Image (cartoon, rainbow, N blue to C red; front, side):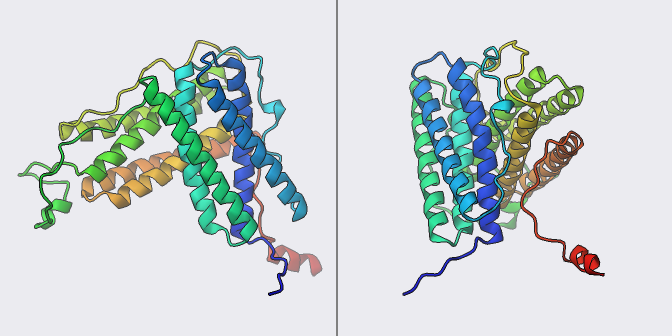
Length: 337
């Protein structure tokens, strides 16, 4: 069978553009981590993550050139100061690596499902394997060092059961106590608590190093939102007599010299906000208590507004790079008139 060249679809262009932006950002962050980490057990994992990002950037650069698509600007050496003082503790760096590997696995699974061309599917599947391996190794080291935040334990069920009343779906009752959380609901409450913990620390560190008041205020607002959402999830867990996840509070130093540009930190928090919105949507669809669904929807709106305000700041400062866009056909028609 004769093969013919296949042009990239809009979905595939979106995937490789997003992937390039994220990996160029990661390369900057990991370069700084390699300069500041002290724990020699963690260094090989940072190096592994760095090598993965560099490999992706090289592959994507070739792909953009082959397809004659302009290479994104992304993030470069200008967006990182490797000589900046140490901003994060080693424990936080390790937790960050695990979190970003988790985000990467979600991203590559999505990219794979949107790809049709064989070379892209092969690339995205390889990326999924690489990030999965990184996640495996980082969680192993977190466990070894006693830093892994486990999901809450529950008693093993002694029998199978079926829902026998519509009250099972209701989270509100004036006369009866809410039903206990099921394991699926607990898992999402736990995961969203952990991700908000990481987000609150990152946003605080970015506020600490930014020289721009507008960025500082937006980052501090992000910290407050993350803390608020953690309190919501903790309250729900405690109402079912389940302890919330606990982590060390030591994560950032008192350094104020910026290791990263404002353009990079704004993009980073915007990316995490988008991931958080997706996590909330997944949690809402998996939860069966209506009060939880309403909470996730309410909190998602808050995150969406926060992300919108962050995008406005980036646009005003010319930090937001525009994704590939279709042509405005009406403009082309008017040009000919």
